[in-house]
Length: 445
Image 1 (cartoon, one colour):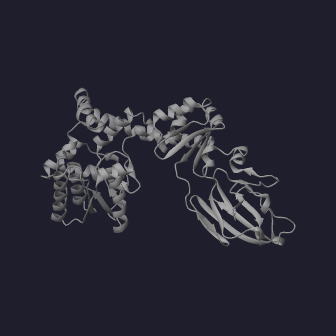
Image 2 (cartoon, one colour):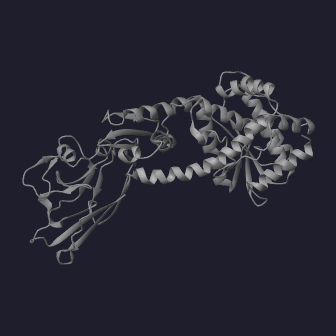
């Protein structure tokens, strides 16, 4: 591709896909490699308002520092604003218990967002090209990532835009050569230690040897797949609304409704994959329906549990450690909602039967009240009963799912439970004919 044609192709792609306009301030991620150097040079020549962001991940010693110095020199030679940040990527990967590759990605995008906020940049341009998207196609194919994974790298994702997806790596290298554009070579891209590099350096050259037009053919197929996925997603959304219901910390899948649908295993995959459950675990979950009640399955941030013919999927979180004191009427911020407390004269009181509302005798309360997670050994006198009952037994009788039990709160007055929040008040604090003032608590999730 000739240099002039390259610039026209990128410009057309930007305009047709509405990536940005001349009114945008664009932060360009520049590593110093041929892709990112071509991106910044192209946008510079097309006269967009650009700035450079360079991350030094401190993974290749002097080579990483050399990349940084090279990019800084380029920016200064063209009076392009530049932002540079260094990361101890290995330490972050160890701290977050993720791969170095994933740590670098998270650090990069977190920092990009910060730079945009501080400098009013409206877009983040990344140098992914047609080859990168095709490599992603094959990676996702090998990982059983479903139809969405076969659509390749998206053109946009929030602020992030990818103007070079219309051109191949060969086109980019040709542009750099014709422009006498210098760039750095990342030695890690030459080693076949990662799956992407194996596809890039081994698989794709073999495919091109078999079919010289294979890259364009795969790219065209991905374009068709993107349109098919749009239709497919609409159908999945309808089934999700039919089979799933939201909970305070996630959602629940009604197993009977799921199995009443055609292609139940595919639907389960589409429901769970966005929450980090991999295809193997999703298959295990599907096989366990109806046979392993109480078994849990974990993803990085979510946990799934079978309970009473339902699959509960909730975000992992530790118990709410802080002890919230309720001293006076007002609103109190909780981890997953707001607790509102008001007092009402008995004559104006109207009973609210909602489970998220508790009405008690205000004068029986001893302040400050304490709102906390329930604990083993807790007991209270459930409304309508005379004897005490352990909270654990009460929650079993109420058929509260296991995952939701760990999030149940209790409101306590002088060591006595007033309300098992969202479930039942204590008989000891019930409103009677002798009540003068009603204390009303309402929980808003």
